[in-house]
Image (cartoon, rainbow, N blue to C red):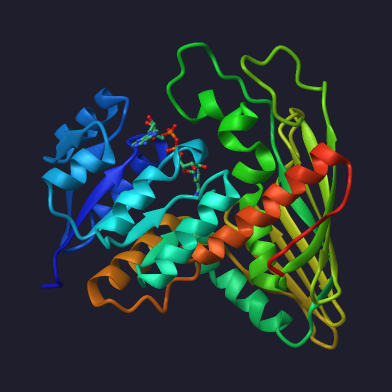
Amino acid sequence: MPKKVRLGLVGSGGMAKAHLPYLTKMEGVEITAFCDPMRYKADKLAAEHHAKAFDTPAEMLDSVEMDALYLLLPPFAHGEPEREAIERKIPFFIEKPIGLDLALTREIAQEVERQKIISCAGYMNRYRKSLHRGRELLQNDPAALVFGGWIGGSPSPQPGDDSIKSWWVQKSKSGGQIVEQCTHTFDVLRYLCGEAVEVFAHGAHGFNKNVYMYDIDDASTVNILLKSGGVANLMSTCAANGGGGGVSLNLYSHDTTLQYTGWEHSVVIRRKGVEGVEEIKGEPDIFGVEDEVFISAVRTGDASAIQSPYPDAARTLELTLAANKSLETGKPVSISAS
Ligand SMILES: NC(=O)c1ccc[n+]([C@@H]2O[C@H](COP(=O)([O-])OP(=O)(O)OC[C@H]3O[C@@H](n4cnc5c(N)ncnc54)[C@H](O)[C@@H]3O)[C@@H](O)[C@H]2O)c1
């Protein structure tokens, strides 16, 4: 019987419901408590999982003993829950993006490192076989050119929505599509190609009309200069309703072409001098894969399999916020940490 891991979930919305089916199937994992300022959401999940419900992370942590936390919060709601976890030296899983305030994120990253707290950000693509293969191939043959992004339809939040739909369309709450959604692709770029040196972005506005509370960019294109010397362009839109969009990333190195498609990041690989193509299908249950890695790290104290600890995820946030800054200023923005 594996060592018991008691979990508390902060945030009882969509991603709580996405992780719970995997967590509840894991041997030795006990869901002890939920908290959410929309208390009825925590109450509902607590009733379903024979757990306790609270309004705030502090109340939850003061009342129930636990071994790890899941922070499943909207981007604007970060800070206090992380501080509560750090104060009590409790390992935490945190959904991406890990915040909107870079200074706060750096402060938390420093504490996480100083106190050696196990952390794992929800950049789940880093656990895909297709990405491991890509990283291996690009190690000694880096990509000269990369392009891709996240192309989707118009959001349609309604008054009274209490889910991601309500905050996603507000830049002060979500950070916009680059920071909230295409962040996965920016993170995959970092994972496969290394750090960026500079970004330069352009945005499009006025295509999505009369969307409730909407003030994010309709589309953006971000040019990225990589430390390796390669160049990338990552595009996002939430104003493409004719179909044919989706998630993609194409990487061209001297001898290898990698074409990732779909949320599952299936890849087709072509190599100079190698006949035929290599195909790797993406895993549909990747949330379960990352949950297994995090829970195992908590259980054993060995965090070496975690691919996206909090301090690393802070660098993906820095890159996407730099793209936002370039959108605002119309100027190239350097990445300070590179
Ligand atoms: N990894 C992925 O593929 C993926 C997919 C979708 C969403 N996400 C990310 O997951 C995060 C959560 O998204 P969601 O869809 O669950 O949003 P959601 O709005 O459905 O749920 C978030 C919940 O957090 C609650 N909350 C807000 N402040 C809180 C606080 N201080 N303490 C406790 N609870 C608080 C809200 O009331 C809400 O119920 C977001 O950062 C989002 O970007 C990741």
